[in-house]
Length: 204
Image (cartoon, rainbow, N blue to C red):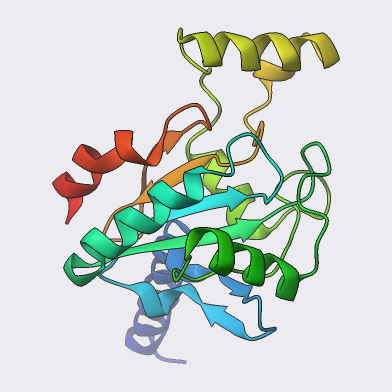
């Protein structure tokens, strides 16, 4: 092989690797299963602002569905997509099937934003999207509000070192993704959807 051909091949390999690296650093490199069993390619959301949330139907934070749907309705025409990932890992608060979850959300909260299939967000079988999300934005505390202190106390009783792990701590943890597919912020369950409006407006 001539030297020029070798150089061209080396450049092509470097560019290919760089492209793969860029893709892995955004949400566009991931897929997930919808609650209808269809594969969702997150590259289809390029150019959108995403709010990704792990949800549950029998949680004290479940009424946040109202606020999430309100944000979606208000800003979807400006490029916002709210995406719910039902999860049963926290207090067994999402026991239903995918169909039951969808019906609950629709009948009780009028949810129209996309729902994914129920999945784990922590542990060996965790959804790859959430592994990536919390590696990009690790847990940084619940804050000093009364509800934040209550969450800290509850989790500390079960595991005094819980805060040292970057993973998801409870239902309705929210991740805000910009139009380039990058994680820009993480919000714990004690932060309501209404509190996110300024951050969302800054991105759309």
